[in-house]
Length: 183
Image (cartoon, rainbow, N blue to C red; front, top):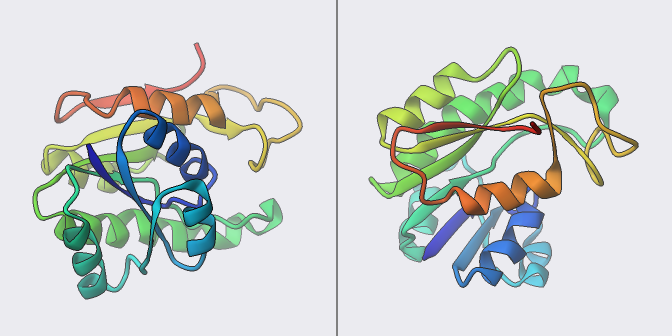
């Protein structure tokens, strides 16, 4: 399958690329600023800003994917700046999702969301209304996350397990919402 991965350099995206390639998929990895990271992972780098709809349409349609895998967030690496970034993250979940759906032109989408309050109902509804699949991740822990020293309280998921499960669920039925959390 040809997969356009939006958010290829994020904490889940960098884990997804090798898993997707290992499963035999062709992957275009979208990033705003790190094409070398995407190329080093083995995917086709696509430098694009999700807020530039024209460029995004050209990028997605130029790759001609069978699936758009939405892993975009706008969260800082520094946990102390998390509160200040919430509006930017809300924007990427709303406007960014809307733009990805537009650029996909009806191609199936699998999108990340969250399994803890406050949730992302607008973002999820857009994806589901387009016949997509929503994966609600628990709080991530593991290397590169805000919880790299140990697991947070539930609902949680190790970031490596989140990536593995995402690959397993690429063929989930349209309109499905799945919680990706530890049992």
